[in-house]
Length: 279
Ligand code: DGL
Image (cartoon, rainbow, N blue to C red):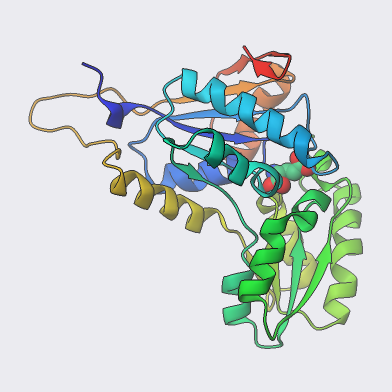
C-alpha cells in the first residue's frame, strides 16, 4: 500500500520565484520530496487578470495532484492574491499554503514606522493585500512599488546587472528618502536579489524574506495532517527525498538557472498547456 507521508509536496509559481520558497523548505524539511512547477510560458502573472490567474492556478494544481501532491504551496504572491481562496473552494480536501506580504513582522519591528513593500500590481490590487494592511498595518506608513521588469530580470538570471540595479534603485530611493527602515518582499522572485537590495538600502534597513516562515507553516500543516515524511524506522529503508522540476516554458533555460538560484543541478521536465489544462 502506498504511504501518503512519502508523497511529494507540490510547489508552484509563475516562474522561478517559488524556488526561493523551495530553498527554505529543503533546508527545514530535507526528508520531504518536492515537485516544482514554474509556469514560465505565462510569466509574469503580475499584469494579468484575476480570472486568468485562477485558471492557470487550477490547471497547475490538478497537474500536481495527478502526481500525488499531498499539500500544495502557492509559492507566488500574485497567484495567492488572485487564486488562493478560489483553489481552497475548488479543492476542499487539499491543504494549501499561500503567500501574503509580510506586513505583520515589518509592523512589529519598524522603529521609524515607515515600511517599503515591493510586489506586483496584481498583488497590490487583491483583497488579500488589503486585508493584511487592515489587520497589521495600523500606525505604520507603507510605501509600495511594483518594480516593473524585475521579475523578468530574475527569470533571465540577471541578479546583479546594471538594468536590475536601476529598477531597484528607482523603487527604493524614494522610499529611503521617506525614512523606511524595513523592506517587505511581496514577490517570491525578489529574495534572489536581496544582496543587491541590501547594497542599495544599506545594512541598517531590514529586508524581510518570508520564505522561512512559509516553510515553517508547511511543516506545521503536514504535522497537523499526519503527512510529514517519516524518518526511516528500524531497518525499513525509504528512498531519498526527491525533487522534480517542471516548466511550461524553456527547459534549458530553467535548467541553467537551478545552479544559480538553488546551488544545485536538477533535471527539468517539460509540461504543455492545452485549454487551461497541463500535460
Ligand atoms: N513570484 C511571483 C510573485 O510572487 C511573480 C510574479 C509574476 O509572475 O508577475 O508574485
